[in-house]
Image (cartoon, rainbow, N blue to C red; front, side, top):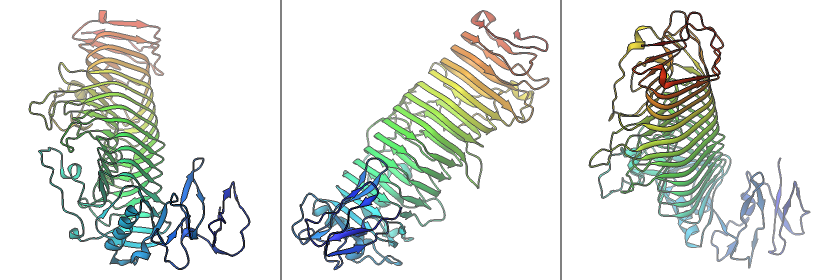
Length: 562
């Protein structure tokens, strides 16, 4: 839909936008056809950049559909409550991709802030710049065709800040000032529009495109970020954040990293990065332990060579009340397939509690699900494990899995209360009989990653040191024969397996193996293919296992005890 807007020469001639119709223009108007929505607010004489001379209109978003509502533009006594629009080219920005526009853009940001806030508007063009300092109550609007491009000279960016305390996290996680656009302790800041932020790098290492530390009330909507050499959107201790409709392409590092943040909404984003796509962290970069809480992720398409959605690895502050839904996860066009689709990791003494993940489609992901409780102990005088509990993962379809899904705690510190419901995984297969007897190391302090244990003795799920495990409607298929177990549970208690279906290759080990399992219930299992051994129980006994309502068509026998 294309609309023309009209700016009146009188403050009383207010144009309104109702439905899809603009009211007839009043007399003595100048017609403006904006490239996106805000250019209609700029007077022809370009002298209205100071609020005490000319007051400009501002647009707002209509809640239903985020459609623009344009009010009025006039010289004269317009109410001070209407925020101002500051066009960066009126402050000297050349937008020619060659001239450094840092000073001109910063001047527009500063004056906008000094006059009480408003919108700094970027018309189409390419703005070459170094570090920009965002301000409270100031929104940046990047019009269609506007590109904010990072300078290739590192000296154009602010130096790394001094933290004043020890922090074990890496430089990318710890520092925020060496960035293209950054702010610290500001509020009501927004980056909006259909324009592009270009990190202008060909490899990892360099300024973050957007970095916000200890900020509140942040909106980042509809923009595109390309070629980011560092975390594309990096947030630390920043609360009440709305990230909507953002696209991130060719990222060499992480996509969106909310670290120690609360009340964060991420929706309708498309992210393609080498490193993790969306990765909440709970590091010590604030000098205190602070949890990630009240985080939602929905309706996103995530492509990566590492993990699509991950909690960690920096996890000292913990993660609580988090939900992920309605997302598609897949591999990038280049590089290895994603290591993990969903990874939940507590290894630095923090607690993961109250996480729900649902309605996820994964394509060519090596390990669809990875849950790890470890004891690395970053920023701890004495390493002490945290907890990982109360996790519900449901309605998952995954293909191309060449690794089983590990759900692994450590001795005397079990993962607790995990439910996997309605999960369908296509496994590549290829496991050998010898691999069923592999000894899996504990690796309590090792960097957590889905492939950290090497070859595992099962092809579907490997569960160890877990208390309270429910597997309902779990279906596995094989692309090629695999002689390992489909499911192996070791040191697992209170386990319920309901409607489990997995194939057994000819001559393979049992479908399920229990080792050191206490209080198990198998019910409603009806394998779609005949099996010779459905379950094998070792280091315990069948008296710990209750069978209810199963229909196993067996070639020879459906259970053995060793």
